[in-house]
Length: 535
Image (cartoon, rainbow, N blue to C red):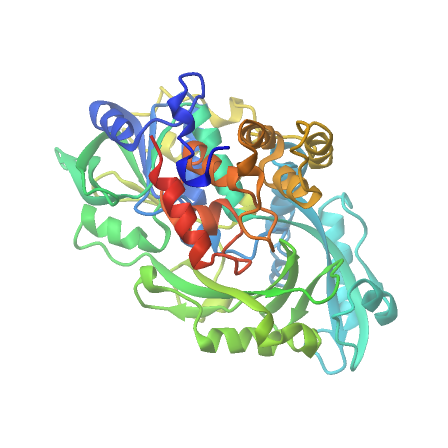
């Protein structure tokens, strides 16, 4: 039997279709002139690269860290219409969000986006009354054409039967509505894969050190491979700055006199072990503008989020002790103390919302996307939300086509003529995939049901590629940690098929080991060894 440490890269077999080496990718990037260079591998950059490649453009995508390594993997994991936007009168926005949510859940990523029932508890003396919330959730359901059910108000007794962790002291009623959730890191990686399958060339851990200029126009970028220090460059007809919290940093490379265009809001979350079943998520109003979430997610309980102005280095953002205590204190409005014991916490993380510049507090700022053109012709995009990431990608593409004198004008297939509901790789019914994984295993390699369910809901039909690895080497079917569903074949798959280069790429973003608190020193050492065996 092959030991875990000696597992070779899939690419050692010519028919395996493994990813090209970093050296080969750097050479490919440096030798061609691309129609579009996307700098920034968060979900907005990834989405634009996907849509541009679908249009037939020659596309390159680079990121200084991992794909979705910052803000895009630090979300509340929701695909939602935005219930709180109703109170600001943004009815059209909510309707658009619902449309994108339904398309993602039914057509684009049914294997990755899951329905989630929400409870809005109404307490005596709370900021919102039962009648107003009841009307709000009904209107919210109406804007989604009642596709998931009708928003309603239920009794505390009925609510606590589904969520034993619900605090019932002074509880008057519970409003119910419906949304969806996801694993944001997995959706991002699948979207990168979709972009590559459409022709894009991608490289993570490649930092932009400068912009190339031709006759006063941005014409590419100088880069440095953060893993081995190799310096190289990329030429492009158009450059898109999609660096999220770093968007102004790159704009200053284009024009050192450029003024700030954004402000940042920090959102922290914590992950807890669940002590009781949670059949619904909780969304509890804290004040007129803010809601605190308690979400069943990845067999855990996800709590958050904060919303505070952030002025530090984006690379240093993290969940502080103050953040953690605030999240626990706010969760305690509606969650029983037994579910909030600090000993249950497995992980804490924070990300940065990119908001338009302007007056007032960040909690009141609009969650909108800003697209701007710099003096050197570089286009910058910042802000937005996960739910509408495909729509934002199309908006950016339309902006690229309409730029005065844009070299892309006339070459690009209009976005309106493209297929709007192209599914992400692996699209399949997760229940059917899990069943096939269980009944289709080779003799002596029966897959654990929890692992089969996990693979099916994180990879879809691509789970069968992972199952084949286990059939070839049963050692890869062993759990990485006894308390989690992941198996060692996922590490090999992440290494050879999903651009995972570092331990954190694997444990934090390709799998859920870190958020479960299972990334022990032993696990990290074994993953390091396996990553080192990449051919």
